[in-house]
Image 1 (cartoon, rainbow, N blue to C red):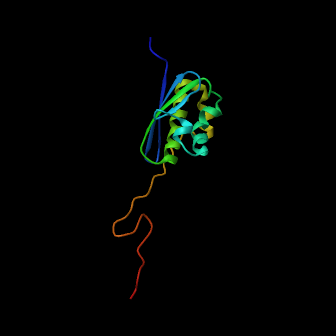
Image 2 (cartoon, helix red, strand yellow):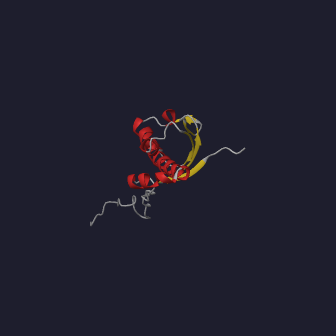
Image 3 (tube, rainbow, N blue to C red):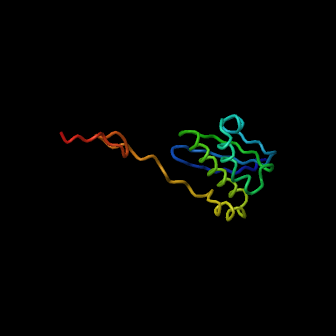
Length: 130
């Protein structure tokens, strides 16, 4: 007998989160650690949980996340995106609610590349006329 599970891939900056929803008791595991242990800041924990809290399904599913790349803010955003996508796979009637909240939209902002002969993306070396 196959286990009923739903997958969602979330991305933000250079982070990629593979989120798996399994009907269960409400555990939230990120890279084999509890969510609160993985993120040291409470706002990142709250941010990552937003989609499941919005639709009041936090006690219905166990959330298991594998995440790679980026920093903690990007990872929290990737989890949010992936969790929202997995919830839509689990229950299609949640889509309008999650879409209105903006959780299904991939945040396309990326770091601008550093240009050659210059200090950074926008920063320049000081110009001297003489």
